[in-house]
Amino acid sequence: MAVPVAAYARSHERIVRLCEAGGDDSRTLRERLLGALRTAVGFDAYGFLLTDPETAVGCSPVADVPCPAELPRLTRLRYLTEANRWTTLDGVALLSELSDPADSRLWRELLRDHGIRDIASLVFKDRFGCWGHLDLYRCDRPFSAAETACLARLTAPVTTALRRSRAQTFVVRPPHARLPGPLALLLDRDLRVLAQTPATSACLSRLVPPGCGRPAVHACVYDVAAQLLAVEAGVDTHPPRSRVHLADGLWLTLSAARIDGVLPSERRHSIAVTVEETCPAERLTLFARSFALSPREADVLHHLANGGDSHTVAHRMSLSAHTVQDHLKSIFTKTSTNNRVMLLARALGARVLIARNTSPAR
Figure 1 (cartoon, rainbow, N blue to C red):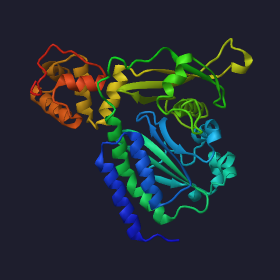
Figure 2: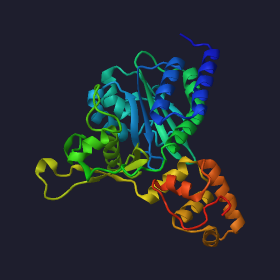
Figure 3: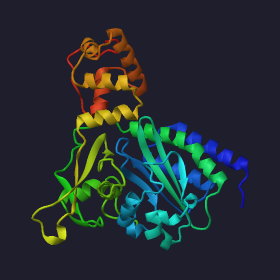
Figure 4: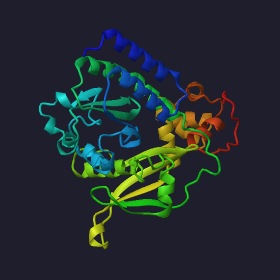
């Protein structure tokens, strides 16, 4: 049944208001957006993932997928599928618009058997990075041209909202926010977990607690391992690494690599996924992207983090001290800070003591 144009307009306005309101964490924001989208276009299942803005590897999913018991397989196939892959999209693409839906390996090998007829794939990216992607699954009919146009109009405001929600996670990390110990998992080629260190499950369950049909292993582990498979298959070139916010300003970096050598035959060539605290340099880069700092502003921030004062930064960047001050004022405005100590404490996740005048004018 056709939906009146006015109904799409009202849905668009409602979603834009949600995006502009701010204040929600990324999970709450996505849940509210999905509720509004369901009213606007309708769908039977979904997968809404944040992504590392540099590597585009998924993390922190909000999902109700058609085959939750097969999440590792679904993730592996999604990363190995070239058709409508989020890393090559610009806006919205439909499975039904492919010359042959079987060109989608994910649909051909899995979703077709679960009654999925169409998939609307959206990517949320801007000049600062790729912030997330969304798959909407439908069983009864393809998405219409009007529905696709409605979704396309939403990519820009949702992108900005996702980036801003990421920026809210950069707070001064309290002393208790520490990793409990070495965190690592061993997976086979089908992304089944072979082994893990004792502290790993407890740590990752803080991202999305297991239960209610969810697997004990967090989906971000499957994503980074699946990206390694995609790189090996020549599907994508981004490194198999993602950075995800755990809690209380603590960011984690997940990386995947092959294990070779003298392991038992069943574990030879398995995939190791390591989890460690995000280093200050990478955290600083994420901070700059999340707050939409310009390249010049990001350079000023990096020099400040390395201990430079205004005159030193000006010399290193071949700028006048006045220009550096202008960049600093813009950075303070964008990050809602008013001095360097506060700025660097949020950016680096720790209280930074700078034995210099920290007023905005310096």
